[in-house]
Image (cartoon, rainbow, N blue to C red; front, side, top):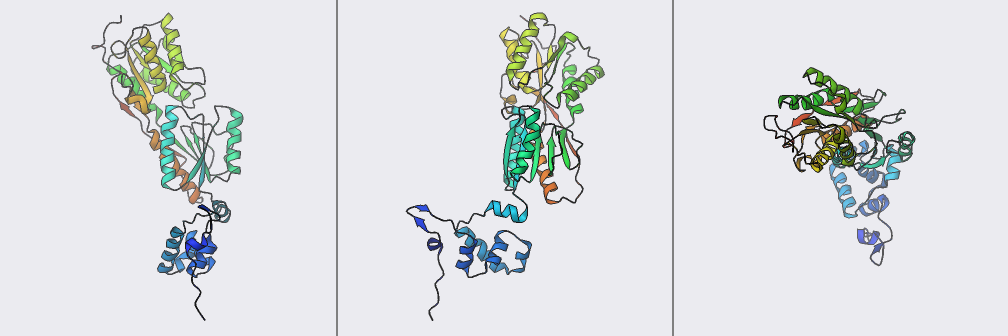
Length: 361
């Protein structure tokens, strides 16, 4: 009796013109190799029992899957393994320089681990902050990453919080030592001889603003810098562009300009302040020094290049992914409740010693 010729990928993958009518599945691969469907499924889905098969058999199956351009059914895999290899990322909004740097670290780490992700922006609306975790869980995400977002309800699945210290069980917080960062900023201006400093306070919607403001005042007290109430500027709108600080500094300059330096809340507000100063003929650093916070992508390329306290934003994103995946894959293991990263001062062109400063026009 003549042997039945094994079907080739070309025959199994039936076509209508040049468009595939049906992608090959596990059944077709098993038929092509003359193996059982169970064996092929175990190898392709990386089931531990697959190790019982001969290495040569496993290699043949993987080679055939590549030859057939096989793509697994992720929904079926999620149901069988209770794992979707998908993560939800929740943040205030996606245009802020801080957020984009953090997301870069998250994206790279997830792609390296072959995970997909959903991103949602709540624009600081409490109803969305509560609703989004539920909606993402309904889409079978394996875990959640909160970026500068308060966790209002228990996540219900493994979770990580970036820039917000959370006491919820099952959550790891990835934070930067704000005390060290604020002290570096104030110490730098103090060493340059600045005593009349304009301090900025961030928006209430930014979860770091309250702590950073308190620590800025502590640092000013440590270096014996007198706090002038007229030189305390609060960003009081939920706006994450340079325009907010630009308008605030413009208003302040109409009533008070007796300061030699600005300690900005972040790089975005520092850039807005520098523009407001320039528009009235006050130049940085010739007349006023400005220090930012974060070290966003444009900080080293604006005019002048910005002196800032660097938060390791991309590393925060990467650490968040590593901690989250550890919680997902090892649920019974003890995981850290907090990971604290260290900031550093990056001195560029926007700060200058009082001795080198020029008299204002």
